[in-house]
Amino acid sequence: MPVSRRGFLGLGLQTPVTETAKPAEIRISGNENPLGPGRAVLDAVLGKFPEAGRYPFNSSPTESALGAAIAERFGAKPECVILGAGSQEILKSAMRVWVTPRRSLVTALPTFEHCTAFAKKFALPIVEVPVDASMRLDVGEMSAAASRGDAGLVYVNNPNNPTATVHGAPAIAGLIERIHKASPSTVILIDEAYHDYVTDPSYATAAPIALATPNVVVARTFSKAYGMAGMRVGYAVGMPDTIKKLDALKMPYNVSVLGVMAAMTALGDPQHIVNERARNTEVREFTLEALHDLGVRTTEAQANFVFADIGRPAKEFREACAKHGVLVGRDFPPFEKTHCRISLGTMQEMRRATDVFRIVLRPSTTASSSAVKGGR
Image (cartoon, rainbow, N blue to C red; front, side, top):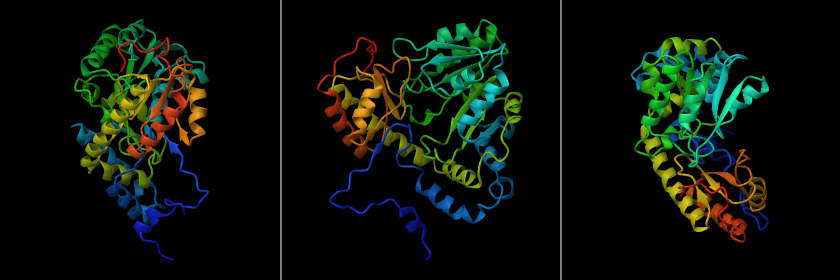
């Protein structure tokens, strides 16, 4: 029986209600966009299925067209852009290019673990710089560690995952300047996965610096605000000579026909990102207020998740919430005994989730000894 686009999108989304039906799980553990892509993207992807049997170079638009469209947004040439299967492919390639047994990775602790895990898996040298008292990246210590001359790659996650904190443009520009002055061959990779959610007026993308400065790369992804985590489309921008080294390791056909179509359509729908940022900001403020009313301190969140001092092990909190159908984040050493990362769902989901937090936390919530100074 033929299925319309509307019918296709509705398949499996509604579960018949019975007397024994349980509320659906609330998955606020993966920093995903709970709404998924915009309507324009969904329609475009469904219309592209007849070409799913083609390779990306043999369909329209091609992956080259997507790279050119991204470059145009930054006022750059296509050779300044590389596509990836999500930004994680780009991070892995960067590790393979610039980190060696003699050239270390400099990163934060805690931060997104992809580069760290790669270094540890292959016994590569790594310097992990603890976040500061406000759980922001300690850019002073990171630049000092990178300036010793043996750093191959500095990984800067801004906003930082899991702490949700951000540095303004002057701090990032200063870090780049200090590292380049002391160690010009060191590459700085700035991961801006959560760029679209930032509301701090001091923040700005580092892409213009990357496009004008050797050995600087800015990575982005369509997985977060664009709601395409399952489509696996990411990209990086930088000077041609820098991008060329990443391109040498790019997996063939790393972006699918459907992914290219989705990303091209998303780029043409900027209002969707404006709306998503506003929605996320409203939900973030609601969630922070609810946590603060419980006596839970948080960092200054600038992403689609918050990092909360729950005063107990994250595992204990996670298991208690799961009993109520709410799934929260994994452990993030060295704060796994006191803090938990909580992703932001829809407003409806977060109202239900915070009700669960009240049940789980209120009996014994106290300010832990590791509370963030100056936190909210």
